[in-house]
Each structure stands twice: as structure tokens, then as C-alpha cells.
Length: 401
Image (cartoon, rainbow, N blue to C red):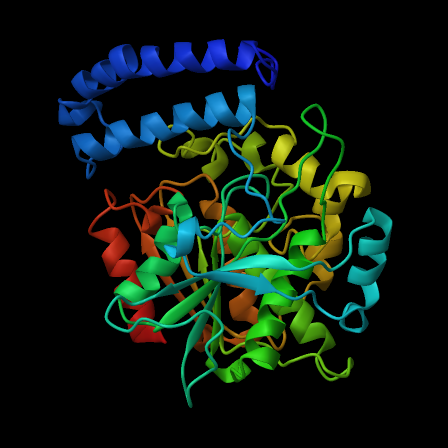
């Protein structure tokens, strides 16, 4: 195994990618397919050939792109990509500085990040087209969505794979339209100097929420905040900021009506990989996420100048963390009703269940819903090849809401 980001620079990057494309298409995939034909060779008994091969393919892509070359394409929060009008989007104004207070304001000052305008992309039903920036209808429900990608990659743009999240809500008629925020992504050495660490993404998420409530006129009671993976982490962090500061800060809206967290990343300093009974170990072969046992590029980029220790102790970043400061003092009082998607085959399974248990303790079991796909991988609800679990999860949350 090469050291991380060995092939991040040209011309090695291009040569390495060409090699990986051809070797994967003509060697790896055929071998994976043949090995998946006998049912007893698959990682889970319920998996078909397609799922077995897709999990291995995505895991390999994570290894190549995540560990060796870095992101292939960086979404630019400074540009609104509308493809000649084919994509619906608009600029979201920055949150007023007076609404950023306390611990988050201090961390923002340390990281030298401040609110900026960012792109937002609209999703709507084909049968009920809407205009970007259309004011709220009386009693209309709206989805505010945050994409996953470890805080370092992927995009809110409808062309991105994570767009399956907001599209799933609309497909199952949970909402009529959704706004997905192109929040700032983090990066650090050796790819770039430290850029956009925490709480940059949280400030952008707050901008999106305030835009829906204050500019478009949606009642907080009609807003659902959702996100997958790192976007799930951002969703709960935004809810926490609103819960802890509403009523104390003039002009800050109330928390939303509900959270829907899809395989949320809830402990960025999870060291349970040393425990052979932890999902960080037992699901290593059944999930496509990679766990090295040490803080990876994702965590280092996101914490930036604050240092990785921030992920160990901070309730916004690691609400399911195991540090004594968190386990003894973290509170979810005032949190919105929350529905969680979790896969039994994903390495984040145990930390997600810890998060659920802490939520239930503080806001009650009746306010926490869950859909657990026994053999589901990370973000299973975003993959068309992960049926019937994908559709069942969205139907479950539609009924719950």
C-alpha cells in the first residue's frame, strides 16, 4: 500500500487513474462477478450479485480516490452551475454575523472563517414545477438538505450521486420541493493549505435555514432538515446550534420540525476500531467505507487549525463520542423529532445507535424513529441497486412524519 495521496499530483495522477480504470474494468469487475456467483461467497446472504459487486467497486473507488489521488472534482461554492437553465439554483445570502455567537463564533474566529453567500440548488416534483426562490405556500413542507462526502468532496448539484437524497423525499411525496446547500468543503495538506475547517459548513447550513425561514417565509414547523453521512452530521450540528441559542439571540429562528438523518456520521474520532466486536471491525468487509484506525484526511481537513482533538471532545462534531466530557455532559434537550436511517452492514452502525440512544434518553423514544436495514451499507437509501431497503426507508419516514 502506498502512503496517502502518493498520486495526487500530475502527471502521476493521470497515469495512476488510467491504470485503475483499465485494471478495474477488465480485471477486477470480472473477477468480482465470478466470485459473487456462488451465494456462499457473498459477504451477506441476502445480497445479490449486483450488490456484492457494487460494494466492492465503490470501496475500491474510495481507496483510489480517497487515499491515493484526492478528490477528482471540487465543487466550487463561488459558482452557481445552472447548465444553461437546465438546473434550478440561486444564491443564498450569508447569515448575519450577529446571529453567530458563543462557542461557534469563537471557533470561526480561530479558523478565520466567516459567513459568505453560497449556491443552493432546488429540487422539485416534475408534476409540480416551482421557481427558485418561490415564496412558501400556506402550510407547505420544505426540505433543507446537506449532501455527504466526508466534508471534503461531493456536491449539492443535481448531477451529483448524493442528489438521490432530496430526490427520494420528492419521489415519495414527503415534500413538494427541496433546497440543497453547496456548503464549503474542507481541505488540508498535502493537497492544499488548510481551507474551510469547522465551522465553515455549519455557517453555510445556518445561512440556508435562515433563507428558508426569513426570506421565503417558511415556518420552522414546516421545515425538515436532512442529510446523509457528513451531511447528517451537519444537520444535527445545525439543530444543536438552533436549540442552544434560540431565545437567547434576537432574530435567530426556532429549530425545525424534524430531522431525517441518513447514515449520519456522529463520531468523527471513533476509536472503536480497536474493539474486535465493534462495527468498525465486523463490517469492514461488508461496507465500502474505509477505516484505517487513525485520523484520516477527512477528519484532519475538517478540524483544520483546531486540531483533531476537537473531534474528540466537541458535541457539535461528535455527539456520539466516547470521551468522558461528552458522555457525562452532552444533552439533546429541545432537539426536534428525529428519524434515522442506519445499515446493519455499515461500519458507522454502532456510533449511529449510540447517537439514537442518547437522543431517546433526552427527548423520548416516541420522538425518535429509525429504519434499520439489516444488511444495508452506508447511505443505502441513496443507491437504486439497494432495493427494497431504499424504498422501504423513505416510505417509513413518510409515514412517521
